[in-house]
Image (cartoon, rainbow, N blue to C red; front, side, top):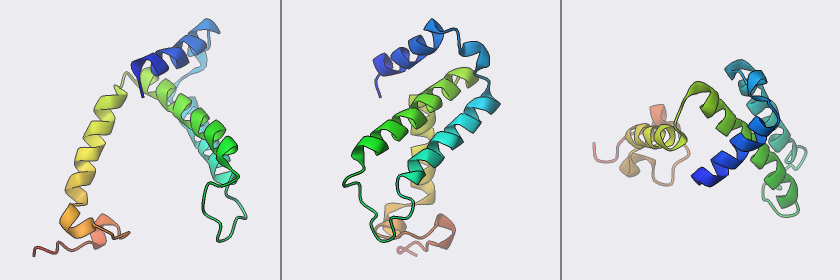
Length: 115
């Protein structure tokens, strides 16, 4: 995501004087609600797990989730690039390629193949 996109989301909020309502608790709730709306796109789809025929709704709901994530990061003074890099690094340690490649197991269930 570019800084230009982040700035556009923040400007949209600021132009409406909504920052006053954007505390971490309410933003966390909003992220969860929008994520639930994204999940709803797949509700009752049984074995149909793909995006076909759903891309418009997925785009809309995913944009809402990401917009609220930008607002949450801003409210908490967090740098999105920094926190994502840190998380990828932590995940790389928990899920080394040798143990995790092609596996859907949780890191606590993985055994390092090199051992």
